[in-house]
Structures are given as C-alpha cells and as structure tokens.
Length: 117
Image (cartoon, rainbow, N blue to C red):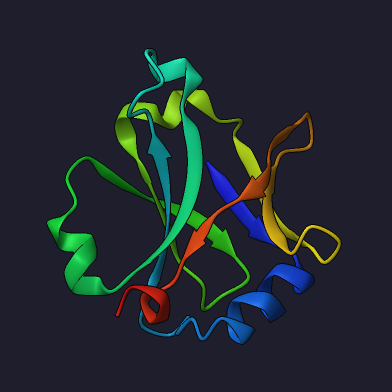
C-alpha cells in the first residue's frame, strides 16, 4: 500500500501545525455505530511516536513525499485501494481521501495534536 500527499495537502498540514519530522499521519477507520466494517468512515489523525506505539494492529505504509510517514489499521487495510492520495479542497476546507479509481472520502476529518491539546 502506498499513500501520496498532494502539494496542497502538505501545505495545509503545515498550516495546521503538523510536525512531519516527528509525528505520523494515522488513517483511522471509524466503525462505531455503522453496523458493519464496510460502512466505516476514514479519519486522519496526527499521532506522536508515543501514541503510535499505544495503538494495536498498525501497519506503516509507504508515504510520499518524505519526511511524512503514515500508518493504517491492519484489520481494515483490505477496504482501501493499493494507492491512496490525500488532497485538500479549498472550496470545502477539508482534506480528501481518494485513489486513482474513486473518491473515498471527500470530507476527510483531520485531528491534529494542536487541536487535542
């Protein structure tokens, strides 16, 4: 699996205060209240290295460009295409998760460490 960040998404991550040198983008798959794992909703979360080690069932995925790093939950890896793209829409003021084949989430929520502290 491979994750590519668009230039617009990178700029927005910087604007949000994400530290690419130390922290990891975690593609979390929320299934609470969905009834079925296939009906889940992806969410983007910034994790510190300490928080990442607390998560179980994690797979580090190839991410471009460096120094960005990303992780995904192994148990739902099959839900996604092999090549993923995170973009940012200035019209919606939201991140977007897509692949060459489909738009996965046009309004991808991002939780930065700055928002949670």
